[in-house]
Image (tube, rainbow, N blue to C red; front, side, top):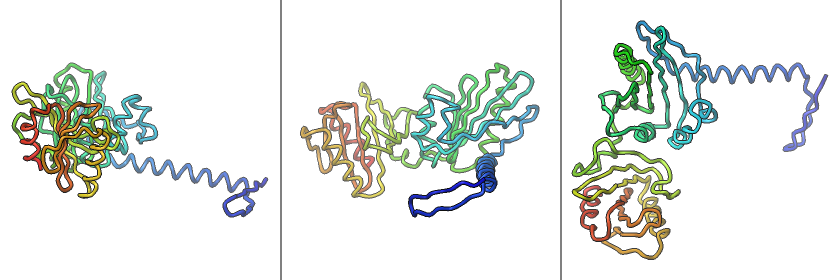
Length: 300
């Protein structure tokens, strides 16, 4: 049997033997399988004494992440998720599950990690930062966000899980420091372990992206500071001017490249920029401009 192929782009006809076509399909499928397998081999899960390791999960990518974490996938995809490797360690009825999420860079790995942590957790020196709570160990290192959990209440299993977490961190390697932009935030009044990175739609605006945030408390005042690092001075200026434009004409200039605006989503906002860096302060009112200016000046 033969099939007649028609390619409208160049109007070329060709005759293909059906057996050859089957071979091509088989070759394509094999190539895809090899590609996925090689991707899976990028992660070699450590040995954990006394536990049997199972790695028969598929490698999850953006197209099928929903199959594993369903509705939570959107949050991971927002932080430039690349792939996920999963394994289980079993000892009788005791199970430790480990998930290794790879993101496009260290900043996005911190972003997804920071979106799921709480300052009430017990923080540990693991990777760049990690925490332990209720049978869960989460941390980020390099471009990876790593999650371990067990439903066992046995202390030995929990100690084994910590051992596995540390071995995995050593295996993954990569940067073990917090993102450098976090060092720009002044220490005075800053809430510990509440910094975050927001990749998209900062403050509800689709054109505001890639911001680090820190929360502050100074006496009765509670406010948040956002720092944007742009690729160029021009892009920074364009973003700042666009933000001013969408807030309307009710703008009060508080200094050179410093404005107080009324944001329909967020109330009164202080905006300032210099060179490639833009700072936004929310949660303070017009009569607290001195507080906003103090922090903005330190950052810029």
